[in-house]
Image (cartoon, rainbow, N blue to C red; front, side, top):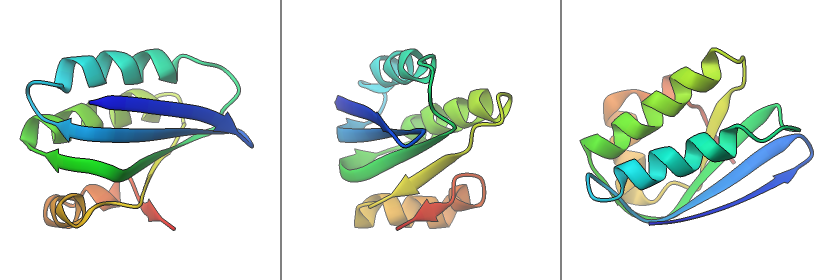
Length: 102
């Protein structure tokens, strides 16, 4: 798993690259938590275009981050999901809490 980020126009953009599963979950969780501590953003956009695989552990990581940021009133949005991620987000209803944007 590789995680890239940047802040632009009060938005934290995060690109997840690789597989989000039990092997990369802890690294992803810790890295995202560290990124989410940065100042100067009011929303988060997670780009899944380079996410090749995600299992239930990965879903748990994203839901956990959503809950942390919800407490701070910072919304999380999803963009560019792979077909695999799109299917999971639709099937689990995750788009209801982390809407898909273009």
